[in-house]
Image (tube, rainbow, N blue to C red; front, side, top):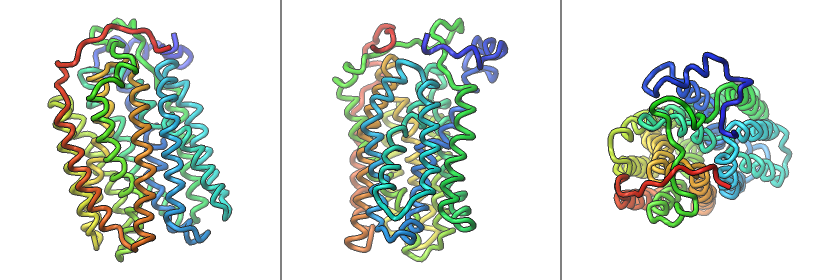
Length: 428
């Protein structure tokens, strides 16, 4: 069956570990979690997103491109994520994660490395960003979450938090690594280094460990593949509440994260200090993932989401007025809590409301809206700066919009109010 682990990479001791419960350290699912977390660390959602801002000024200085023009590259990548995510989600539901992640991670890593060969032609930069975006969610937590959700139920929040912690580690480490390589060897060498990381870390770990749990597993707490068809999910109001809040948060957070380093250096912070603030954003994202994952397993997810979005809105409001390193670091830390927590909240709520049958397809559709918004955020902030020389007014507006959108989460129904759906075969 497509979702069974490949016997060529599963040892007898691995097979024995299937029969432990998810509360046991020897449970094979925890190995999947560790491998998936490291894959996410070097995937699209971490490596591309969190290092993009570090290259804004070097590319502008090298080629004379405006920040808005460079930000369009991020926007085009995000738009391709939007276009391709539903198809990637359907492929994940049908064929399982490993067969999708391996080719996508290969193209992603080579695409990042190829940015080292940029010439003063914006179209070359845009085409590469489009290619990276097309495979992006096949090398991000959308793909890995499918596997994790088949291994865990009672501890799903913690398991997802550990996987998403990989993005936090990447956000904490990779901007500093990229800045260090840029300072010593130039931005071209930095792109080669980042591309090599994706290939040398993501590929072997995914091949060795990342797989779905076979549905006929003998363990007593095996997670059943039940739930709505994706068409049924689209007909519910709670799905569209999740999408609406994601859209606003994506505009706000992606715009803020992408321009964070440039904003702080404009206000007198050194390049190293700005990179440190981005790294602290990653650290708080890592902490936010653990805390939010733990809380989701114990409290109603909609209320947890509301609190997380309020914290994020506060960080964006503080960033709008940050004029020295300490304020910038605090703002980055608060935004990081939201970026980390949101990555746990969305897949968790989808499994609770819609089940696993079409989980990746529905997750991919939410990513379409998230990515469209993610494309808009950096571009409109770049335009605001190019037009007015300041980010303050737009960031303030985005902070209040995110706080209001977060309130919509309080309209979500209790999980017990959602009807149960029978076991389904894989989507056709």
